[in-house]
Length: 115
Length: 113
Image (tube, rainbow over all chains, first blue to last red; front, side):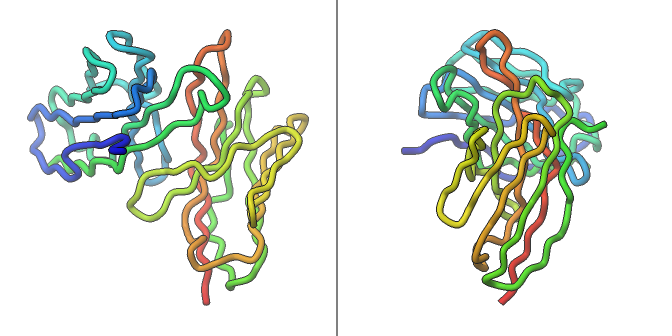
């Protein structure tokens, strides 16, 4: 059971470059989420998706773009990376109904450094 | 006022100690409550859901006080392996749909031999 996987696990890039972080889940969960985690801020929601082709902004969406053409994939793109986007990025997924509908399962994270 | 507030710690306790974490939330419409655990440089993982009646899972007990908008986590007989950051999480559901999780910044626990 692969669960939810993120790639790459580590990434170093330069200011102004485009970067795409990948997220793949094998559970067929309807919902997927992208968070960033920084010291002093905890986890903050960037974007989320309720289903394929349905996405919505979270708390800190500026500078990021998402897409969801397939249920299992939810890539996050930094169109022009800035140093303030240096962070740890977590992808998560959850089911849409039932007693576990609000429980999110997280990938291992991507550590991104923008130089 | 922050939506979910926790004492950041760190809590440094000896093995076998009982330790309690508290969390307050600002939105009275919050409907679901959880404790997640996050090990250093790892992803958050669900520790337990929190129910109005209180619930227990082995050495862990979670309680919710909706009137005071307060959640607690009690760990009895602490183990070295309990060392981690504990995240208080709340969510609201709009019209029965999925709610977004609001995370506290976490409380760091360090259990010493």
